[in-house]
Length: 251
Image (cartoon, rainbow, N blue to C red):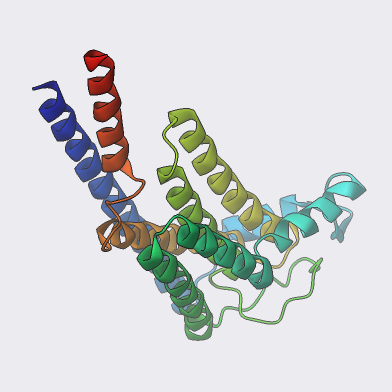
């Protein structure tokens, strides 16, 4: 009887997890569509200008606030969301999944991330929002502003990879740590783009929304892929706990 109850409890947690992920994805998409609609209509956000100006010295808008090392640090943090590094991380994560005998998920991961990156490029072409012109850009940029590619792509990669790695861990503290690192990286990269003056804050928020939504949907699909339940994951971890508990009683 205890084993049956534990299995039902695990099933309930998984169903709740799927529901929460779906609702989060829907909320993110809704907010993105709202922002996109305003931008297509040519509306501007006063908060965008205010926040960008707050990050520059009042005497000279070309100089960011904070010590000199902060600018260098923001450039380095921004590079964590670059396409080259994100591609490398995706390939390394896929290699890990292959080593863990998760061939289907290993193939699905780069495909989903590449599709998300392509969607980001299409959004930029569709909205064609100019980059901020009220402050000096501290790094070179060439594409359109909305949504932030760094914010969106880093959300897709770090959140998806972080969630998949967290599923491979039994210890709750480790799983929380991995997810927390993924979220912090995503937030730091997006914030750095605002500090560097190359994105309006609404660009970054939109990138976070659609990127996190894409990651949530990718995880829902990954959970249903063939063989996803056979390895590491909530159900297998629950099953392992039941098995170990039964062995303890037998011994």
